[in-house]
Length: 120
Image (cartoon, rainbow, N blue to C red; front, side):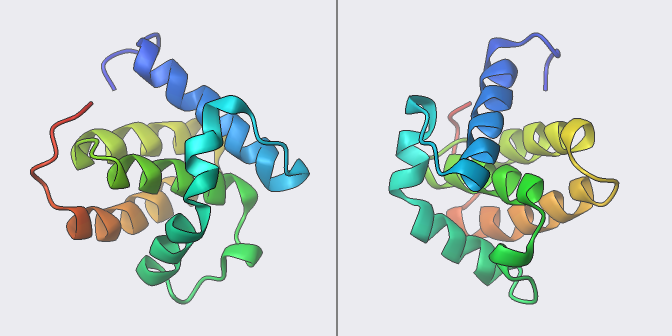
């Protein structure tokens, strides 16, 4: 994260909020349509990275954070950027344990998509 006002960071926060709302109300904001189209694949990646945790029983904040991060990894955003950004959002919006969980799961998923991605 370069700054708290970086437009890319602010967009990620808005995407996270839209995903969080979706987890409660099923409302698909246009900003997350691409994520929702791949939600089964994204959730499978989360489950594979954290098989001891059922997505339906996870805190909805963590689910929204992980869905955002996994989607970005799947679409080619540089893993270090994704992990750093989503962990920073987890520190603000998640519980005390959220940053650690998000970091661990996204690290596992990032290995699957390689470290040669360069998109920010």
